[in-house]
Length: 179
Image (cartoon, rainbow, N blue to C red; front, side):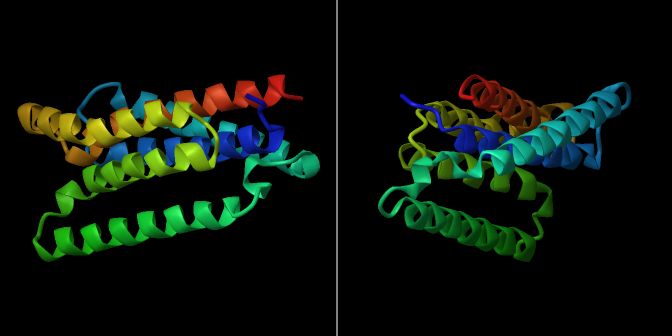
């Protein structure tokens, strides 16, 4: 399978940015100890990868993309639109029910599920692994949070952040090797 530099770099940028965001969300009520240091470090590394990916994709924008094919971008945007709509609907319901502590797990679940239809659109079978991890993690995170008296946002972000960081790193390496 051919790897487009632009696609791998953009994926690095997006995953790096969102890894940083999940590390940040995990800082809502972290346990005492060194957690804030590694959460802050994860956020910083995610932002560095986001900048690297953004600059690399910009420099290689005309190198081609899997989304340039017939209807590729339309399907990508459709999946994203559905993802945002479902996430927003769930957030509204959780807020109405007074269950705001579960916003992070809900969003993580929706993000995980949205990678299943995106994997074929982006021609990236590795996204199935990411989808599975981010779909299962919110359930494990809530269980972990409840057993250890942790904020669900901490537990969710403490898992989602590193997973996205690893996938950002993998795509960053792929973008460099595709040059």
